Length: 63
Image (tube, rainbow, N blue to C red; front, top):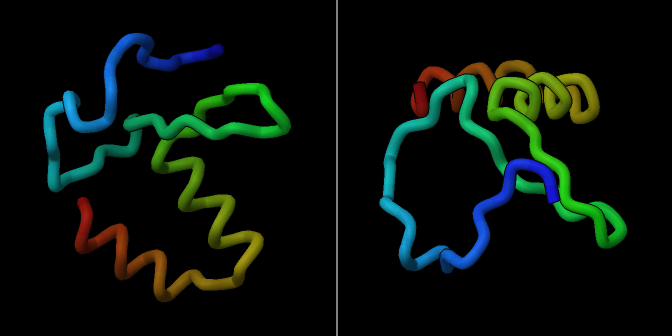
């Protein structure tokens, strides 16, 4: 599994209220684990959903 944390549960992770463009999220795709950055995820959502204004607003709120 790429860029994954092993042996730690979500409740053991340090909470945060901000995101940076390089923060990664794990994606499970057909049993395989992949990672995507917050910045790339926002760009893909903009392209696929056509929600530029909403996502620009979320980016301004979340950082």
